[in-house]
Image (cartoon, rainbow, N blue to C red; front, top):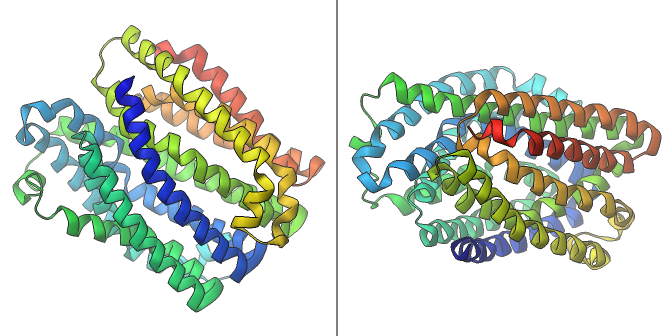
Length: 416
């Protein structure tokens, strides 16, 4: 547990930087675009999450897991998994880039009810190779448990990408904000690439060459999981925003997006610690009992921390709105309570969901992601119609309560 606390502390420093930069960006967006711009930015970020989630699928959790499992035998033992990952990335790029270029206008209509933003989709798909490279480097660094380097690179890339975003927003207002959201992940990838050129594992022979079907199949399972997440979670958020827009308008959708953004930022401290320490740790364990012991010991530390953070955000929400946004977002203060309760249940459920990634439980993961993302949209459809903007927060809380209960009672089956 000492190592978890140490990693949480270091990742907390990185997340504090990301929070600070995120808050600055949110403030600039609020000033230059208002609630409507905030809602539109949310749509772009969901679109970026979908495309990046697909291209990052072979470079994420699977690379972390197999690097963590084989690092003690040296880089050559990790090579088959790295090569399999790169092969999958090349295949996905060959599919996604042409497809994104062809479907740019229809996607723009789906996101904004207008074809005028097709250029955003085009820019995003052209940046995908750099996005995948950045994720691959991050995953290897994480799997090798080089936490200080992982955090240092994260800090540098965060500062550079955030400064570029702020400059674009100030210079081009809403268009700059949308462009910045489309380019951010690619910029981070470029920074990661430059910073890793001299790493001992960053040699062509480790990454390109023959790979066995076993490794390709194993990475393929993680691709299915990551693509499922990339399609379900961001798509469900787009649909919820569309539900809000149709019932209460872009202005109120922007108020909801502001609260959602605050949740994303402060929960980043926890989710980064889980991704950095918890996932490799679970991947290195064998046996259901050992995994359950790790889950329970981690939960005793993480859940109280999340609860305290949520309470702090609630009592400081007026200050947060004043600092991060503008007076136009003041009505968002009424949306915090239910959202923050949902945040605590969300993290509790994730502790029991991570074994699906650590053990490569592809079917369990895909079924739960699709089902509960669909439930979130369904709950939002009915509750927003009844309770307005607050209905989306209620749907969020209700959905994660059900998700947690499902995982809690099935964790032994998932962890086998």
